[in-house]
Image 1: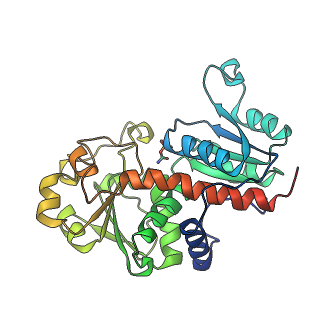
Image 2: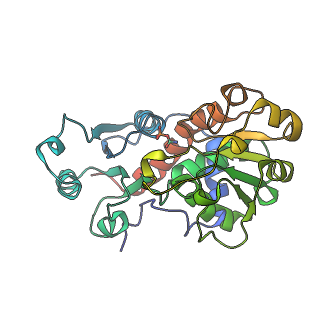
Length: 297
Ligand code: CP
């Protein structure tokens, strides 16, 4: 059994739960004081946006925060395993663990054995629920009717935890998803209902939102080869020709000139920095909900 307050994926959310969260963020006052809470941010993979926004969110809800990175400053450098590290950190009884873990770690199985709520802050290629929530909140705040929305996800879909969480959310909220990218980077087991676009032009004309994803070379196996990526690069020319109506998103970090040009990323079509700004708001609301449920330690 998972701890009741955990956020590991979005599969068990209802549409009402999404909209209730989004409304509470829209109407929110930015700071709350829950008092005497402690949160461990445990990051076994690099992060800028997720880590710093959770850290800021902890300050906003009044939780003490300790940050663990698997670098030379921790006992990982002495050979301590990921599992041992987590067991020891949990034994200190924080009120919440926010965990980013690599694919080889059996995240969900471990989480069943802990007594502390856990937030999945990105797990291998399997899910990044708070990223999908902040993306969808960003669109919700532009007054888009999510149930009528068509989002085209472009790039390395196969290795993207963000895409996985969007698959879950879209199924619940009725969002239409399309994907476009090199054949080798499209998963063979896409959920039903997701349209595959062979070329960017057709996908851009179909969509209202273009979500570019980073090509995650660090997750590619040596034998993975794909065609030239330039056909999937979102640049000014393609936006001018087929996508002036599009809102452009990217979870970051961005490989400029590979999946998107910097000019487009900073153009009026882009929501990219708004996504980052909303990351703090969404994570603040989630921390508030989970930590306030937990009672005083
Ligand atoms: N979008 C995202 O997860 O970015 P970071 O890896 O910088 O946290």
